[in-house]
Length: 411
Image 1 (cartoon, rainbow, N blue to C red):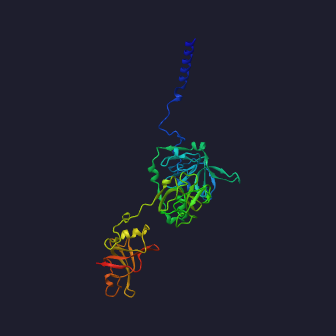
Image 2 (image 1 turned 120 degrees about the vertical axis):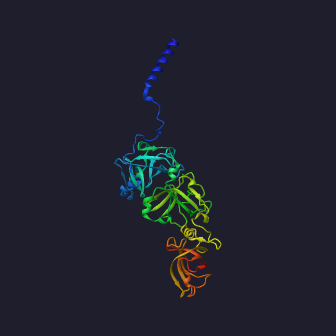
């Protein structure tokens, strides 16, 4: 009887094994186990084209469902790995960037920085949150009933994306741009670059004192949506802040008091730039500056004067001390005025004697600070090689030796 039971059991196992057949073929390990691998790259537009098409929706902070067969393709530049970017990640291509909002944690697990992704927008919501372009779902305010752009469900999201290749951090790094602080209040610059991976170099945090942390939750800092907005020295918080969540991994890390370089996702809320750090490694101390970091030659001393190229670069990069005397050598490239009446002269010098990349010598003196006279005025002419000592300044848009410079040598 027992032998018969074993025979029946063996037959049943054989029957189930045969039923598996070809329907249970080995998995395709060449495709990612996430997303919708059936998506194709048809109807792909750039992010800039998408922003242009829906400019009115974004600028009015409203939303609309995408009903066309349109897709975007880009690189993940930021995610929730540090706990500071919540339920969303940033995508960027060569033309612009946006945020994708998904009601799901741990997005960094399958959407690491450097991962290329194809996103099918048809059926998703597109809108502006404080004029920041976002892709997601509908958020309903339970108190007022007002609707706005929000997060889509993880289940909806799973059918709308496809991972392309493997994550490559270098792809994200290639998209990193230096933030132009001179365009802080430029509306066009804000519109074109909001959402991008950018870096702001050589700045200080206003509230940093050695003990103050990024995002305390002890009531010492006013929070908005559980986030602390930190201002930078010299810049209004109405236009630029570092925004950190109290739930981030580095919320209670002390802010550095030194000059720092800040990398992150530069989002916007209306007319304010809000920098979102991805991890604490996005804050680095600004490397110590040396003159050898600049193009050109010389060290600005009597023994080793700057050439014109380095003198111009020193001012252009903001490393010049307008109160310090420096030495610059060059060739007189043009003469604007020689005035024995006032005892000074205004002329330009360059490295090659041509009227390109010139440094202005404004109302300078002659050798060793002597006045320009009828006897020496003819020595100030194009082609003469000079070394000049004085104070370099930026006057409006002109880099110049200000009044009172002197010629040290002329030949």
